[in-house]
Amino acid sequence: MKVYQDLCVKHKTFRERSETVDLAVEISLQPFEAFKPDGVILFSDILTPLQGMNVPFDIVKGTGPIIFNPVREMDDIKSITPLEPEKSVPFVGESLKILRNEVGNEATVLGFCGAPFTLASYIVEGGTSSNYKIIKKMAFDSPKVYEALMNKLTDAVIEYTRYQADSGAQVVQIFDSWASEFSPADFSVYCLPYLQRIVAECKKTHPHV
Image (cartoon, rainbow, N blue to C red; front, side):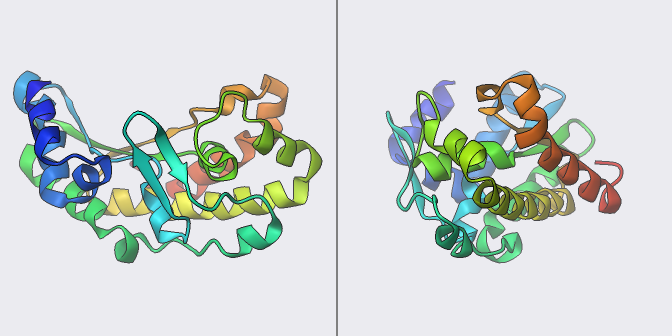
């Protein structure tokens, strides 16, 4: 949309646009104001919660996500801190609350998050990858390390999903963008149990989301 492209000229980085409440709200509402769809999606990124987990990153135009310190050993995993979204990413909650008030009953407010495997793929590989060899090698050859990382990320996704729901999101989509790197059989071992835990835990506290 031209209105978005015009805004990008003034606010050049994705993180500025997605982590500044006024900008995130404005961008989220642009499609709604133009087309009046039945849903409004928060303008954000699946990597946003990493900044609250001691995993420094950036999103570079033309390159994509960059993880400055890839996580590949058990000691690296120990350095990942529990996510407290209300403290580390308060702009997400503030943006959702404003969106909920802005659209009222005219549209559903949608939040989203990255699935544990997709988040793990980025932070282990150091960014995007053509083959995801490092994360798959970890899963197959270092199962204890892989499980420790996935459990830590699963805990974070649960907290982040609940936070979005508490802030006004009526639907929260979980993106597992790179799960297709696994065969269906491997997916059931290395991805599915963590997704099931997220849904089960979030349904306990937010059964209607």
